Length: 394
Image (cartoon, rainbow, N blue to C red; front, side):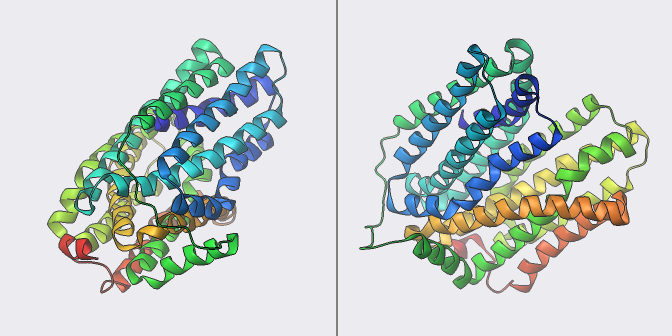
């Protein structure tokens, strides 16, 4: 419910900004920043909270905060006072609450299942996200068309309330470390960076994921423009193409555990990145013939998203198994800060490269960049467990 709600927010909030507040392109850009940047900046604060408090109440609180913030929009619409400052405030609050929810969720799952079941559990979580990615935007668009954007956002708020109620039914006791005598924001930042940097496996995974995030962010500023302008796809065809990525995500979620069991975490991680990078070459190779181009792009969505889902599930599981339980939240916050800052940086870099060297050469660099992400793991092959049993002992 929470995952679907997040996707509805991502779809309905910009529409509400356009329809009810007259937002332009720059306004929508700032709205996107408001949804993501504050959460990244405050991630270490959230990580410290997650490590020192029970995770379930934090997740319930984050859900209820998101519901309350979103309900401000239909209430304002009822009085005809939906403004851009209100939408920016809602975006900031929901973005920070989503950050806290995700960090708590990352740690809470280690309280619910044993180390041996983490890979399977993370696969199920990723499968839920894939289903949400398929259904959430479509549901958000349908709700906007049927009920108007403010009412659709009210329905979105309801999903977070349901999520909080479902979390309230969990009764398993959480394991939390005793709080230190004194902590500060600087201490949390140092701890988050230190635990990532000291472990050779986690350090290699961090560098690989950072490289992957930066390069994949090229797509944010280029993919839609390239598909519509250069390849001649219609908006409907592009929507179907992007939706196929959810199918790939579902397949990757099902294959992540068998791949790690059959080949070991190291080979599964490296293989997933190499396959995910290699299939991206179909994007710049696609001709300006819509039927052929759409087929090639769907292949990249299904195979690429599937391979990268295999990577993300195994990467998350290794982190949860190898890092100290008392600092998992702050380590995850380090990931959140890096991805939160690298995503807009990659989008801007991709746009600048496309302006200087052209769209297709820039998209070639996307495939090369993903291969470079795999290089971090190849170089650090001795640090990464070769078999699942080694990871379990770690």
